[in-house]
Length: 142
Image (tube, rainbow, N blue to C red; front, side):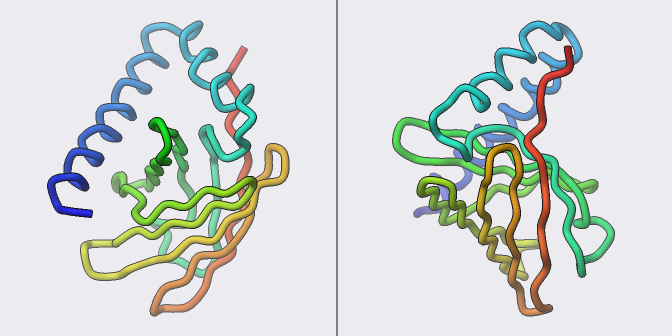
């Protein structure tokens, strides 16, 4: 993947996340339709996931995963307390999700996740070691 492609995807995901925040603030009814796309899809990975991690710096120990699909490719954005990182090398197959992120452009972290219903679990791997990940699908407020 070339730099331009990665940059365009980053802008797209950032725009998506900003738009999502504006929809949530300005129109709660539209928020439900965004969540339902993931909830009603036959693809279990799609949606918004709240997660927690063990054995990591406090900045990364909880956050939100956004999993979307654009035609035949999946995009993942990970929202931490200090910002958003875009997933790379994303592979989604049935209920399994694998992707990588680069923290500060220096440290590569690999994620291996499995989905069971509204639960997501797995591990991340980096040069600092491994970390357990547990999470739940975020449902719309009613």
